Length: 218
Image 1 (tube, rainbow, N blue to C red):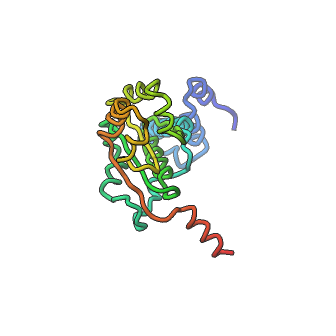
Image 2 (cartoon, rainbow, N blue to C red):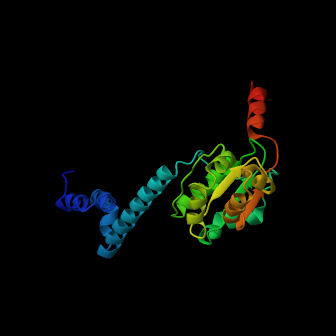
Image 3 (cartoon, rainbow, N blue to C red):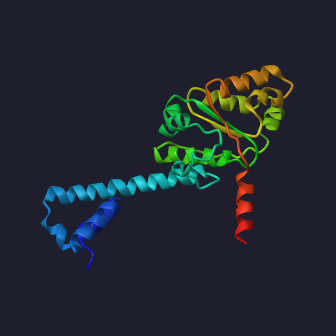
């Protein structure tokens, strides 16, 4: 089928979704019976869907989430310290609108980062900007920085954005681990923890379980 001038004009205007829908309508006899308004509506819907997909792809690329996790894959039948009511509130995202934080703690391998990525993925799907930052020695950095940069960052985010922190160290020990400057520790934790939801994950390491299953399969 030869290119139609309208198709070319739509592409030139940056309306790729409408251009695709226009070509589909030209090649589909079933759509010819639709009214003008219905056909325009289909084209507009296609354009909106294409733009939503592009924005979603861009948000996920910017987020650089460490794991490909979705909240729909969370299995609450496995006891891991994740309570259904709290999870429902976190998935809904109201805590982000209120600029609350989230602290996820627990032993190595129980799925802390996976859960954080799942919630980050859901936030991207809800049209929010997300950025995954891996800080393997967060508390050591806090102690070394002595407030240079870190406290200012938390101050900038306080009341304006939400932060998810995952750690093997229980929240009640964070003050002790941050360093020997109680004033700095108080300031950091006040901005990070005072309005934070908390999940203390438990259970066997998922990596160990996966390893056992692999051995059993052999």
